[in-house]
Amino acid sequence: MTRRNVGSADVEIVDFGDVVADERVIEFHLRRGGNDEAVFAVVVPEGGDWSSAMFSVDPRAWDIPVAVVEQALAVAREMVRG
Image 1: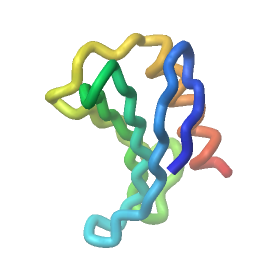
Image 2: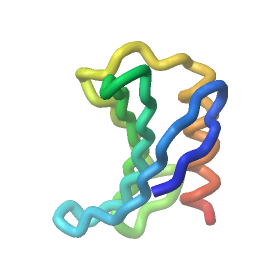
Image 3: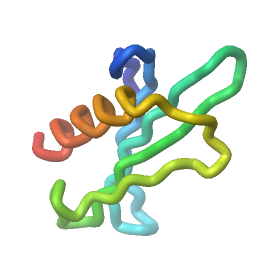
């Protein structure tokens, strides 16, 4: 787990392998005061690469600025391509 400025937001990044679903998950946790949190993720299937990655947003998340999503995707792409 790391913290990083992504766009204009301070974001917590969690990178883990989901052994049940055989995929790599890079989660982005964006906080907005208190415990209010928006979570979105990039999911890469086992053996996949950036072209097979999927973007997922927690349906309970509040609106996330597009600039933050763009920067988060760039960070995830960098992590996946390693």
